[in-house]
Image (cartoon, rainbow, N blue to C red; front, side, top):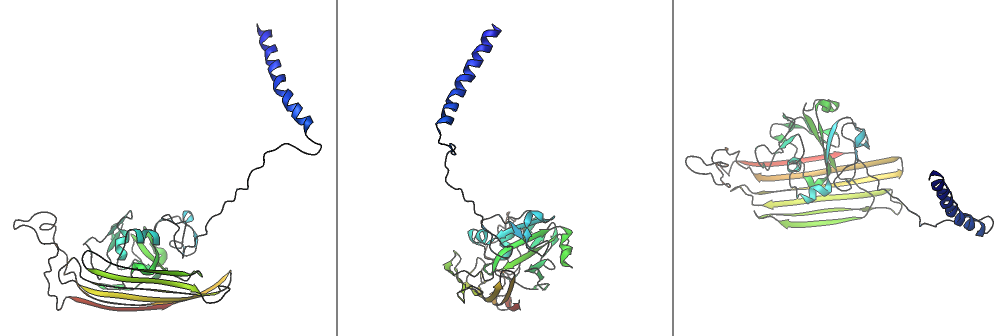
Length: 310
């Protein structure tokens, strides 16, 4: 029985090899048989840590190292919120963008029109943990820089005591804003709208080359918003304009000049309401959501800020 099986196997192998030999002898001399495939080209879109995020997932960052490197090479915990995510969430204040970042408690007292509030890993980072393009923004009490999120390309959060890289920062971490800069591409963007409280806005973002070679380019970004809010008497307006100019004589050299001017004239939100009486019923009932218990003639904020840099 064993001999029969071995013989059968030999016959099968011979039958399989015969067609292959036949095909080999039929080919012209110097040619081999093959299947031609269409070329497969794989391209990747380069991302700069100082430019827009492609989609929702950032691949490069300057926060944590102060140089443009892949984010997985930074031995710290970093979260990045890009321009697309800011637009999709319709963010109107910078601290609103941090509400879904792990380890960050944003707006702990509710929305505040003239101050950004956020805690990182339990520490208040609103005073010593706010940076713009890796440079500290002066903060003291309520005298703080308020950066309109439309001015930003991305918001990056560095968590933990590695924030000491930036000097006297919050031990819980820091927030680094990355501003919009000229890209050398033609940019024409404008939007306008109004919310259900009666606050209207108009925004624009323009950019282009100034020479055919693209070595000189500009960008001009601005926004104006004003009207009513969800709090009685708490209305007003705010706006900013930010020009920038970039010079790139070659691939390894660039110089960018940028500045911004912002003005705010709003009524304060009157303070923070208690948990009992707002979220849960108090013995006397509930406080109206739009209740303003201060004096609108004196409880107001006028802020004027300007920046210039390179």
